[in-house]
Image (cartoon, rainbow, N blue to C red):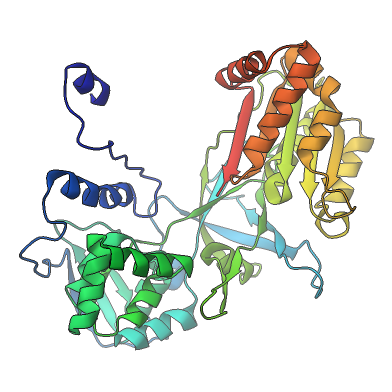
Length: 472
């Protein structure tokens, strides 16, 4: 429709807005980012002239209770689409030393006796929970009684799922993402509850996208401010619970590439996960990501809310087709699964094609994950591995350099044997750097121009033989 309206002579007011159901607040994220641009293009005020507190989208009935005696057990609060999986293993793969700064862990979840199954290349979505102590601090900040028992009924306009019965503490540990990033709509709605005029004006300026508001919002984003931070900053704004349920999005699952093959591990799902952490610049506070921090604290026997999800990784139907994989850091996870798949196929007597892994990290001593396992697969004659540890020598060496070094082999497998190439790593520069290396490989092998190499790679992508699995 967008293109067709232009063809018919329609005049564009502004660029089309796009919503994504996978965003933090689903398609509302894109809508609320685009709406101020629409008002500006129409010459309309960005903030309505008459502003009133909206009618609550949830009917909430509260009754007295105790924090340690909620109306439903914690493990009975299951998000839509999730299944309860029992954690079997939580093992640190990297050393706990002063001269090393990363926490990389191996997790195992039992799926035997559950309706959950998976394929090689799938990912596992894990729903985090907020720390109990932090949630109770939030309740104290807001003046909520953490032990109070709630009955919640959604009405028209309700955005979030919420159990019908739960405690206030459970609302903030299990349901609402109070330690997630707020969107502009949150500031706009919060301004309606501010009783201090200065705070109200600042909140309205953020919602209106004024120069002052942009500066305040930029500082908050720079500090990775979450909902609780904002409510701590604007102390006069105290929405009641029936409003906060619709203002704050629900906790979203984080997806991790599964690091095991069901052929080798039919009764469990394995993950390899690095902890996300950072320092808040203004306060020097050390913070850990919601999901990785939550998973790190769980021991064997814990029940986690999970769901298997498909990814972009699709293996060749013929196991004799070569597979070439490039993984950086925990981007190794899906290629461990693929390698296990090929190993099991060979052990079952099948003919398997070449399996080549390019693995990059900073230090071999600390970050050569699953080294003994991969070396055993090399000994079995299934795997060929090329490693690049960037900090182990004066000249930094990366995966893309190893791909170019092995260019003749890479080109042979991809161009003459219908091979499949896969990349997994950070979305920042990894895909572009690997693409440049692959382009150089094809140009050298085919003695062709750059545009011809790009066309060859484009064809591989269209055929599903060049796949990128990247995270931000």
